[in-house]
Image (cartoon, rainbow, N blue to C red):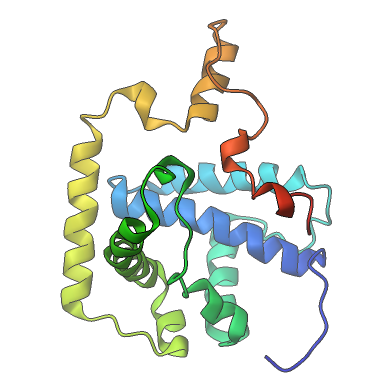
Length: 205
């Protein structure tokens, strides 16, 4: 926001991106998965530290415990994050492209379907933000919104129990389980071509 240079591989910057992945996992489990016990939160935190260590970057910015991470997260949200163009770009989904599984859908129909999809996705996104972030960005979130999100979360949690276990996982994750169990894997280790950028944009930074 103030023209300060930074490097994406700066350990503090890189870890913050990783921390958001971790907190999204926690938020989804809390909101849509029936909640987490304190022991499960500690386990998830320890697993996220091991995941981060695989990048080979400095571990200096990584909090030493789940409790320390919560203080780190609150401080980042309240005192460090800024309202700038990249932040707003995250919320701009008006031109989101058709997902690979809907390539059969004609563009005019996708343009119509995209409107409620984007509106709902943005609403859930705002609902998962900490209140400090919503306040900083001037995003409205009412008690009625909170009740609706809680109702949606409970509905998803109860419906999820009726989904066959194999279909609860991404195809590549499911294939990984199959490989470990000695069963034929149905998906490659590599990203399928359908999930790659258009051919003319592959290999770009």
